[in-house]
Length: 176
Image 1 (spheres, rainbow, N blue to C red):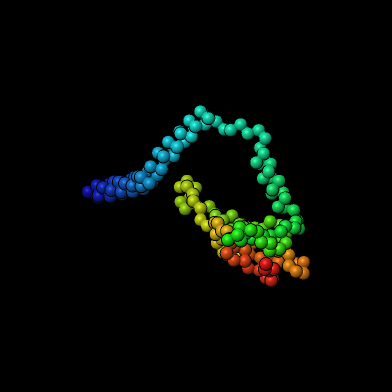
Image 2 (cartoon, rainbow, N blue to C red):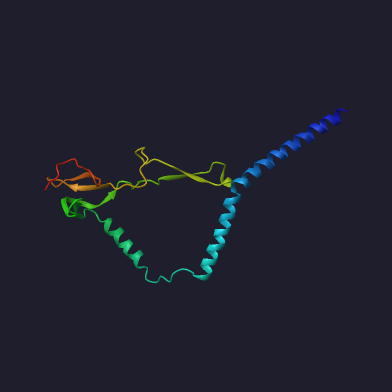
C-alpha cells in the first residue's frame, strides 16, 4: 500500500511538472506566434523583392564620398565659421557672430543612448533600455537646439546655446 502511495505521488509530481513546462512553452508560442508568422512572411517577400529587383548598381559612391568629406571638414581644429539666425517675419539672415566649427545639435549624445538587456538570458531574446550620458541626464532623441562655440569680443571661445526661439550666451551678443 505504501508503494502505491509513493508511486501515485511521484506520478502526480511528474504530471504537474510536465503541465507547468507545457504551459510556459504555450505562453511563449502564443506571444510570439503572430510575430513569427509575420516575420517569416516579410522575409519571404523581401527575398522575392531581392530576386526580382536586386540592389541598385552603385559604382561611384558619390554620397559616401561627400559624407566622408563633410566629416573630415567638421573634424578640422579651430575652423572659423559665421553664425546667423533667420528672422521669422522677413526670412533674412541676421549675423550673430563668429564661431569655431559648425555647431553640435543639442540632441547629440556622447555615449550610446541605449544599452542591450537580456531579461531571460540570451536564449530568450533581448531588448534595449535608455541609458544616461556621463552627466547622468537622459538626452532627448531630437531637438532643434544647437551648441555653438562662439568667439567673444576678447577673441575667446565661449559656449552658446541656441534654439529657434531663444539664444543663451555667456556674453553680450550684438543686436541689430
